[in-house]
Image (cartoon, rainbow, N blue to C red; front, top):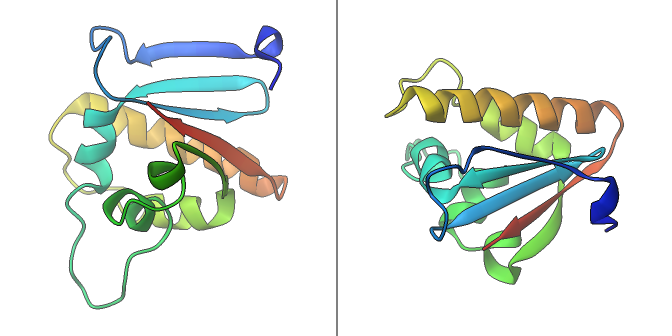
Length: 121
């Protein structure tokens, strides 16, 4: 990945330097997000008997990027999963903003039948 061409957005990682970080990269944009916001979104999934999918599955079962430290993930699967959290009250307004940003990023990638690169630090 040519990082010279990537626009880094640290909005949701500022103030958490040195703590867990997850990056989401697609189409020249790299979102740096504090792991605590990811936990607030998918870390306490409902046990509804339908199984976990996308980011919920990978995060809670330590698969994909949470197993290998990085992976290219299916934007459609992650988008469908994240949409389930829309309208649910999250712990902080920042986590809700992160959810919106992630949904938009995955929506753009899904429209192009593309993958999103995720790295976990």
